[in-house]
Amino acid sequence: MAHIIDITVDPREAITSACDVLADGLPIAIPTETVYGLAADATNPAAITRIYETKGRPRFNPLICHMADLAMAEQYAIFDPVSRALAEAFWPGPLTIVLPLRPESSIHSLATAGLDTVGIRLPRGFAGELIRAFGKPLAAPSANTSGKISATSATHVQADLGSKLKLILDAGASVVGVESTIVKVEDGKLRLLRPGGLPAEDIERVAGQKLHRAKKASAAIEAPGMLASHYAPGAAVRLAATHIDAGEAFIGFGSMSLPGAEKAATVLNLSPEGNLAEAAANLFDYMKRADASGAGTIAFSAIPDEGLGEAINDRLRRAAAPRE
Image 1 (tube, one colour):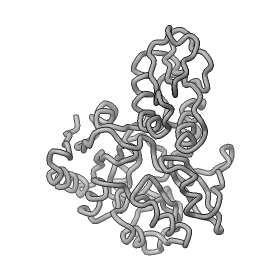
Image 2 (tube, rainbow, N blue to C red; image 1 turned 30 degrees about the horizontal axis):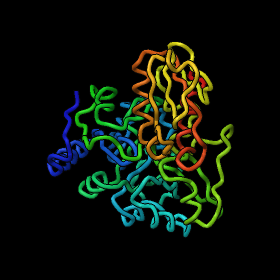
Image 3 (cartoon, rainbow, N blue to C red; image 1 turned 120 degrees about the horizontal axis):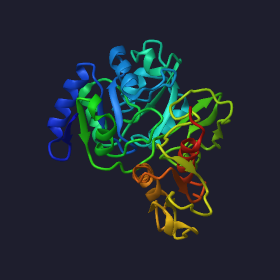
Image 4 (cartoon, helix red, strand yellow; image 1 turned 90 degrees about the horizontal axis):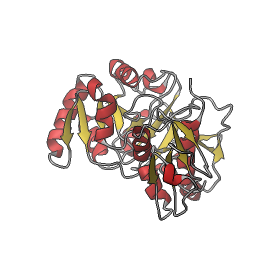
């Protein structure tokens, strides 16, 4: 199993050990404020290949490249005025911006799935310090088997990918709990490719324009998290439940219970107070707990489709989608 280093105990050892493993072209699991990431050198094709192999991820699904600061990001991508305004307002933080690659960019085409654009994010805290110490961008999708529930703790990563990794860095539970929001500017218009940890309303306020949503049925894969089936537990997922069948796992939201909940295999509540930020932080962990109950189906009560609720509902719809 992977060696785990608690970054709160010895952050310098964590950075030194991580840089050594990354320099060998191997992926490591790192904590970010959104979810845990499976990180490797974004300029090294062998390292990027190992990300895809470790996750079992299709190679047409591009990877987000994480940078230490805006100056580093500018070495690899071209910023338009709207994208720059968003970067200055929300970086570091849970926002990914898809940008045109610079012709001289050393990010390997395996990380971008051959596209002429790259999704860039600046993570908060330790991950940014690690990237600065390593000196190169890190390609880092979520640290989980492709299509399954994302990891929000080192324990989640160890249980899923521990046998395939050399190193996991542990910073406790992810604060945001869902992946970054992904946006892209095209012809001056701002598109939402994936709702996430930064509410759309905040982005619209800074951009001074509405976000255009991708059409779900026809959207090409331009960014992570756009596959129809994603974030899926082993159990089936039933949304906007109005009752609970005996033996189902039940994940609620707010103070309202549902008929039949007393016969559920397990009952969890994303936020008894109806707080969407708390619900987002708990989402993937509670999905894993419900899946571990052995229930054949996980039933979710309705979640308001506003603010962070848009990201939560996006993850739930993809978790509930038909699977191959």
